[in-house]
Length: 162
Image (tube, rainbow, N blue to C red; front, top):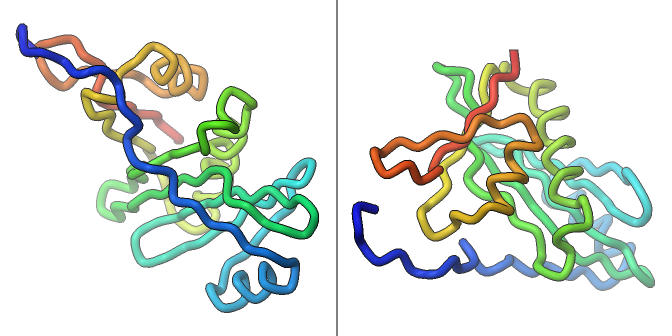
């Protein structure tokens, strides 16, 4: 940032808590929201939404018939450029470094082309989210890390799908 003070990394957004207190309520939530869900591993449920903007996937953990959202990814789709733009990928802090973010992203990438023609997936990393762990995360997922400015700070991620 050309000699400007860079504040320490903060969380990009407070995690959006969602807790559903019974299996019946979880089924009602899925039905009312017209969501599809898959149980992928252990007690994790991947809940998929295709709204007017792009796919969203929420990960819920089931424990004693309570369902707690532990991660989510949301995106916007640009039909003209066949691009999915990740608006947020967030994992509840106590669930980080357990492979949940990677599993969530992989599911998102696998399921999205079933609804949209996708050539690229990209996103923007604000300066305050810059740290090596996040860069390694996206690099391991196959993203190219880029700097849009002359400062060399990684602020863009991009991945070719086709």
